[in-house]
Image 1 (tube, each protein chain N blue to C red):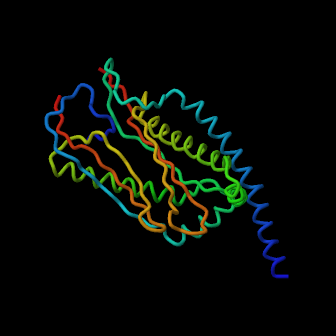
Image 2 (spheres, each protein chain N blue to C red):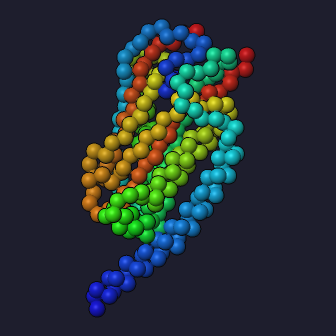
Image 3 (cartoon, rainbow over the protein chains, first blue to last red):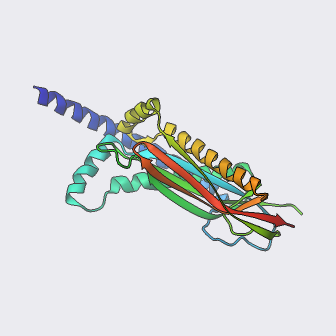
Length: 152
Length: 105
């Protein structure tokens, strides 16, 4: 009887994770694509040398997000882990997290009327290192230098 | 104070290098946030509490670095880098460093 109850709880958690997790991911991707289109006017690049044709003010801008997988994805990833191969549930999580971090960085640059973002760097950090049996929460961080045109 | 992760500032000359300046901040997730994050883990997505926590932590580290640069008499910090490491279970260190310089027109 106890086993049945435990199994029932796990199945409910899996269902909740699957339904709400998939919905949230779809909504997030839709939002990301819209924002990326809007913020395309501020190109972010990883060049290290600033342009020399125009005077710019430089300000450091950054964006971060902490993301976690839903219960269903965590479960399937654990199963996949046994057989090896591509963990596409984690790929999509990191992809949308990283794109969101860049969007936040660009929004900060937008509020300063910046034209470009130079020397963009990414950092990925696992916040649950060393904690057994916990679903990892991962921080994605992007920073760069916003170039604001100086009127001369 | 100009803070930039480029190596030079266009139109300005570096008069003097004042060495590496740094700032760090170690923060732990507190229990309330941890419980909420545990619930959020069910459905996945962004954990807003942690995002804010790390943002505050990063601002504090940057302020400390700027403070150190100011005490050296610098007016800009160039080539700034960030790094994050998980030093203990549930705690993260944010570390930021850069080169303090004295700029002139």
